[in-house]
Image (cartoon, rainbow, N blue to C red):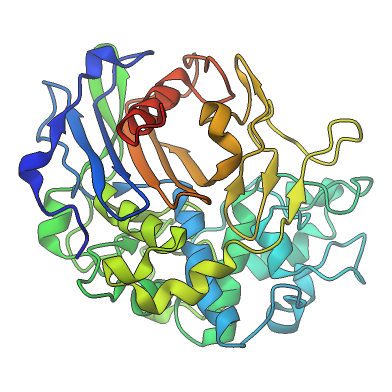
Length: 415
């Protein structure tokens, strides 16, 4: 049902042909608007412990936000809440900017990173503690402890922040009455066939964990694990504990108190095959891949723009032009171009593409779809250093990511 079952058709990429520093592995899938895979490609460094495959689970980084948004939209679709409702109704007054207590913080603002929430100085809040309580204390601290925008920040200012998705995960728990990881398993991953995917490894079987790939970076000639080496044995969940020496039992954690627990902002473990299939649902191909139940929620990801950058009157931190526009969950590309600047990730076709990028622990990932053709691309590379990255030739992406996108575009016949 996924369309990626014929592994005999998978071709081998040349890691040496990718621009930039050495990569530990890479993979890409491109699917045309009729649901046909036109590119299935992988590569692994010769020193890797095992081959990277299209079904290898890995930490997909911030693409997790896009999948969490899809799950959230199932609540919107059933009428449990609206995108412009006040989240304080469910989460309490801590989810209001201290300087603007009468200004509602809405799901749309969380999804478009215009909420005024920030990654605080002690980000993230560990499992066993309360994000709600941390925000309450931050309201009384100098500079709000970094958890809220400065008092003089203009309304609707864009600032990309993981805390927005932690708040969304917390909201999902408050509205649904279900733990975030279980909600996502029931609403999104329990498909036909089911996904071997889960937030912080929740619900992922041991066989999938045993074949998973860690995040790696190269130090002094050695590929050094940064995360998931190895994953916890099933059914354990990898909760963020901070400096705590104890491991809270997820079943003992109260609902709707700390949305960081299952990392909706970056903790989804899934494969490239999983991402491509989810991307097909988001692009309008849900019925083809056994995800018809997600089609109505996926259409809501195409809703009205939540934010668009105005360079003549700056209304956000664009991060070298990487962010130019956001919808209710997905990043929307405008096509601003320049070496090391802008969001022309797909070159001259960029305006037609929507999706999300990820970057953490050496992994750089992407899930994008074309609004016109319904084509989908999913890719990942592993081994990217934290600094001294190869500058993109046409955008604020790295040249390595641009090369992966070009590979997909060429396979789609539009390179």
